[in-house]
View 1: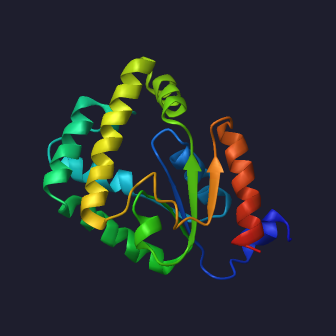
View 2: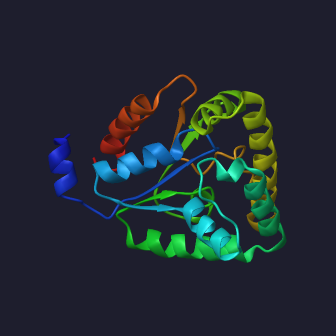
Length: 200
């Protein structure tokens, strides 16, 4: 295996990497770090949906907005109108075709036929603890909001595309349990995996 500098210099074929995991699993944090490490473009389905939320009059300005009352309200709006999600997914598929990209998305592992797909696993209790610490809220509030959000989100994708988010892991190339790992440990493990498989 070449050095990391060599790997970052000579991008053999355009790489497409998907990082997926339920809220609080660490997917966005590690996806951004991988993108920076390997000079890949970073695209987030959640960020794109937030742009739609702003257009609809919502104010997704603070961290943890998706688990807030307003964020859950936008989820209900998405349940009634699938065009928000379909527009975002169409854009992400177009971006993926060009390669040299990392996608932080809940849908791409199922919709995209190519690419290296990573699932980050952690219990809902551990994820609620992380979110409570991140958003400075109570564990109970974080757990209740997380469960509500995930039930609605799973229903949206099951209705739209037929897959079971968080249950159907068949599309994934690599699954990592992050329950007892910190962000740095998750990154180091994925770096080794990516350099051994994607950039071999």
